[in-house]
Length: 74
Image (cartoon, rainbow, N blue to C red):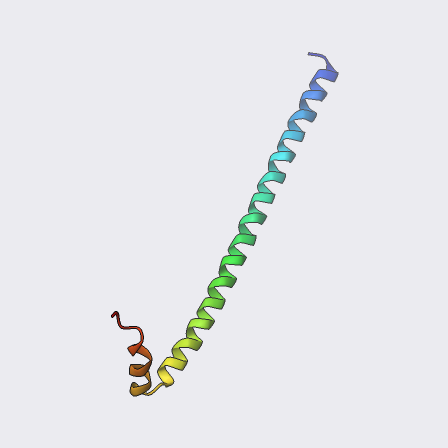
């Protein structure tokens, strides 16, 4: 193998490694973005759930019974 062939092989290896690292970084960025989306959804649902529970807890027992009457199976 001559010098030019060796240099070409080294450049191909470097290109492969750089491409691999780039793909790994893109996959990690995608994972982080998905984690952020899911975390945001959980936070919104948690906040909405907390608000609902606060409203339910503020109801009198008679109001709760009146609200549940329509939910009973017929």
